[in-house]
Image (tube, one colour):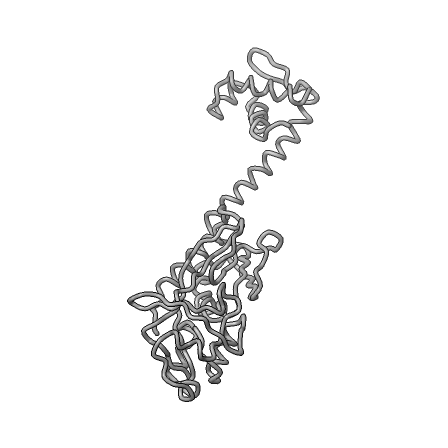
Length: 298
């Protein structure tokens, strides 16, 4: 099958009326152009040009092929220009999959700023706890919280979410003071079922790490519900400062084991390929910049 660049070269020869004129236009040597057109004719199996010393003339087959090639080359050039614009300035529809709680807590306060920065963009957000399929679904990027399973997808860590342990005063008042993480084994711990190890909490302080087996009546895949159950005094929960800020001020929650904290939770932007249009690149960069610059308030 003829290559597109040879078809484009044939069009240049036809437009210039000679190999010499096409050589001046393209910067390709006259002999190279002649050789490539000869190979093109061989691939097609028909002569396209009548050659003379000074000029060329189209054969009947050449006339038909020339008209077709002009349209094909023009469409290819237009497609290239459109893709170039896509990598230069964000526009079109940005389709993002992300967890419900992350979207409400972290993205919602930021997206207005991003939308104002890129007025030619519109947005479709799929807020869901499931792992969307970037191959079969029309998505540009998925935001994922926590460790990722092995996959052929391209994952870029854009930030880490710090977390701390919290409980309601009503829960704390009903139980002995927590003085060491190992004591968590005797408490009601509200676990995130989507975690890689929901029944093992890994806690860190300045001197090291401890792994604590935890249990309780509630194992949930939604941080918003974990938060609400903790406020009701139903157990101890690992939550991020952004989620509990108002509750700390209002006295609905208190931090427990203040010298200890879970490991920060990684946030990844997952895409099908590394070759991304500008809208996706700018969104990932923006989220990384904004999330990493947020102050941590325990």
